[in-house]
Structure formats: structure tokens, C-alpha cells
Length: 298
Image 1 (cartoon, rainbow, N blue to C red):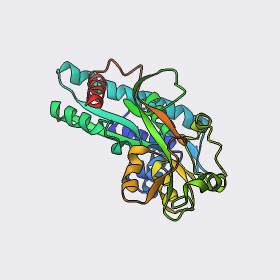
Image 2: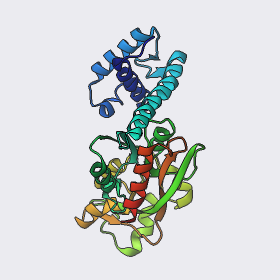
Image 3: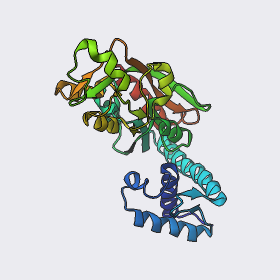
């Protein structure tokens, strides 16, 4: 089959659906409604003559042709980006799409440097397009290894083959409670007793639970997959949980959060610049990586 612009658009939508795990989950990434996404997916299936996925009450599941199409789509879209970047480099100009995957709440960390990087690249060329994908920690690596993002800013203790990790800084995380929680206004000598019954929020960083070894009460009665969700739960006054220090400072300064025994309940997560080994020779990728490293040092 011949590939047209409309096919590339449909393939990008399909890739987003797969990476988000379903049509509803892809709405926020694509910024279009579920019915429109479903229509585009149907158009692609008709165009290819394949059933790409099963969707319904049982959930979203790729068919075998769907899995093949997903992998082929990733390769094709990467080749399109590489072609555009190669043509731009022959003109000695930076042009193309800068796609970055980043964990949530990084914007409140002054060491991040992402906004400074965007500004610096924008000054070098107005032909650069920016695509920022805020996602879970595990999705950052997936986005880079799949080629959807040139680089990622995230956390990882177990490195994936095919990716390079450049350590940037350590993120300090502390244990917090909110107003209304028994620990918020309790006397110092009652903290340890109250901690035994306090319910702790589970998060997508639970792989760090082993590192914490804090002996706290994880009952799985409250779960969140982003720091913003954790804040909502803590502010309810019903649960306690870990948050990055830079992110929690907003509510801490307003007197809505309280840090609990920071000398004991604290851990660090290494924040890294995550790069695919395949992308490092790309002129646009090189410029992005150089600016991110430079901006981080400011």
C-alpha cells in the first residue's frame, strides 16, 4: 500500500492508543474525544484490512496483526523523523520535532532546566516543534526505547538495555501528613504509636519501598500513580505518603502539609537524562541533549 499523510496521522493515533493502553486513556494525550479516536482507529483498520485490537467491556487488547502493526508503525515514524532531521541538517539548520518524556512534578524542581532548554533551542531555530509528554516513571523509559521521545527525564534503578542514563541529581522524598490527620498536631512522644496505625499511600514508586525499609503500614487502601494524586490523598487528612521535597513545599509553606520525622522517613531517587543509543548522532537530538545538560548546571 502507498503511504499518505493521512496514514501517518492514523498510525500516530494508533501508537498513542497502544502506549496509553486503550482509547479512553489516549484522550488526554491526543486531546480528542473517545468517539473520534474510535473513528480514526476504524479508518486505519479499513485502510489496512486488519483488525488491530479487541475493544469492549473486557478491555483493550491488541490482536497479533495489531502487535505487528504497532512495531512497524514505530519503525516507520522513526524513519520519517530521521528523514526530516537529515534534510534539515544538510541545510545546516535545526528543524524537526523535539519530543521529551518527563515524570510529573518536575516543573517545581529548580534543577530541572527543561524550560531553559526549550528557550535556548527556540532561540537557535524557530523551525523546531516541541512535544512534551508527562507520564509515569516507567512510561518515560518506554517512550524513549520505542522512539516516541528523543530523550526522557525520569527515575530508574534498573537500567534498560539500549538506553543511556546520565545522572543529573538526586530527588529528596519525605513522608507527609495533611491537616486533620492525627499525626498533624500530635505531640512528639505520640508519633511512633500513631505511625503504626497510619495508612500509607502506595504509588508507582513502590519499587523504592525495599530501599526505604520503613516498616510502615501499607494496606493498599489508597493508591496513586502520580504525585498529584498522592497530594489529593494526603490533603484529605486520611492518609500519609511520600512526596518530592520540591513539590511538597507549596503546601508545606501554606501550613497544609507536615513532614513526619524527616531524619528517619526519607529516601532519594536518582533523576536521570535517559537517551536511546540510536538517537545520539541525530543533530537535533545532540543539540537537545547538550542544552539539557547545560541548563541543568545553571
